[in-house]
Amino acid sequence: MKLLGLALIIFCWLFIPSSADGQGENDRENLQFIEERIRQYEQIMDRYFRQNPATKAQNSYKLAVDRYNALVQTTNATSKNRKSEIEKKEKALENLKKQIEKYDVQLVNKSTDKLIDQRNLLVEQYNQQLKKLEDAIAQFNEWVIQANQNLDTEKAKLEKIKTSLELEIKNFNEWLRSKKDEEFWTDLNRTFLDLHRKRRADRNNSLIDRYIQKIRNLRKELGTYAIKEAKSNDSGLVIISGNVGRKEEFHFIVDTGARHVSLTPVMIEVLGLKERLGEVTDLKLAAGKTAWGQKIVFPYVSVLGMEEQDVSGIAIPERKVGIDGLLGRSFLKRFAVCFDFEQGSKIQLTLK
Image (tube, rainbow, N blue to C red):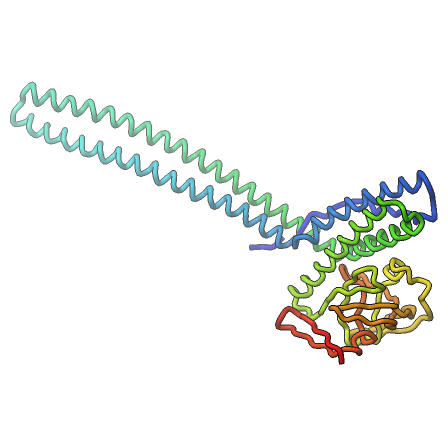
């Protein structure tokens, strides 16, 4: 069965200024914009992340195929039953005909009023049943025409669904190819930061706290999505959640080749650690790549129940959906690290 993605959702990014850019009425309007943006985030989550669009399209097409096949089976069963009824009528008619023919033989040898009456009675029955048979055949032929029209209509609907789903997959692949998923992840995190800025300016606004929690939940959901994608793609990536600064949960790619723990500049500001950023340094990544970012010392990092303080790190962007950074050697070197890829890319940390 041909796989098919999801129609591209069209919306406008609403770039909201930080709370320092306006007060009073402007702040209330900005919060209304954030409410609308969160609603758009939920739509994108439903469309692209909460169920694999290709799987969703395949399931939708399978359901349509199953409905069509069920209709075909029902039609065939009905046709078989109606044919069987017609065959019974034909057989009964044939029996009457044979009886009439016996009377005809008898009448040749001996003609009596009684035999003639009995024969005529059978002929009358024969003609009545013949009329019923002809009516049944006519009704059956009309039903066949209607049944074929219904099947053709449903088949056309099935082809339309198939075409639509193929277009949805095409649009979804285009969405990925144009990196709209990365744009979505980046914008979600910027909104998260914007809300934290607003909360620092207005700590008594419960609406801001509610929006922060909504974005936090979406981020956690996307972290889980990233873990599932890594496992299903058999990429070998190990992604785990961790806590930095005892404030927020983040999702890291475990990278034993990376010298430092990395976190995005946006999330560092979310944590209120922007003032800790220092000089620019490099970070060696997989496949010989190098990233550049500002040094930082994280006051606290916790992963899998293992905690460390004053962990050296670096601020580098991360556009992969659901990922906030790398868990590098500045944290991992303090533990014995054991990977179990047979159990779904699991990792165990034990103190050295």
